[in-house]
Image 1 (cartoon, rainbow, N blue to C red):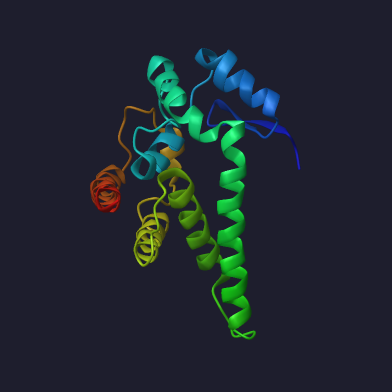
Image 2: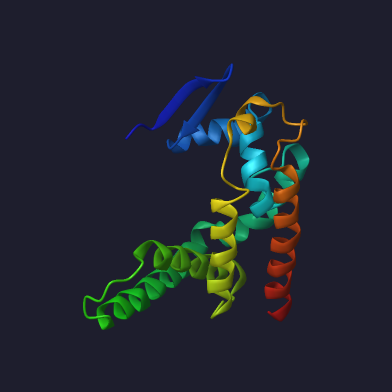
Length: 183
């Protein structure tokens, strides 16, 4: 409901932004004055690796420049078409269930994976999407579940779940690598 929220937790101010101008200010114009929390790194880097979300400085600028053509305004109609097509397929799939119970949360997660794979990599995940989703779910319910020490410990001090997250990261990146290799 709010375009920006700032709150203090564990002695640090955390900011959550939805306002495009504020996001531009933080990520582009004034990025050196902001950093992601240790908890954000601990919880998301096993899934996202060293991608644009965690890169800083020149590394971030290089990744942003590389991604810019795929996210340029001229690319949006194609991405919108991909999203619309995936949503139409899901609506048809759900309609064919004739009101039979279904796990809508799981199906929407698969939809997000399918859209990302198609829009970013021109990749049809097929059955691999279900395996990727299952692995993400296991991570979220296990080592990816935050604990208080994730928020309290400094970034360079490993939390008790560090080793489990590192093992997940190795498995996850190997699986993603295999998917991209097939492409």
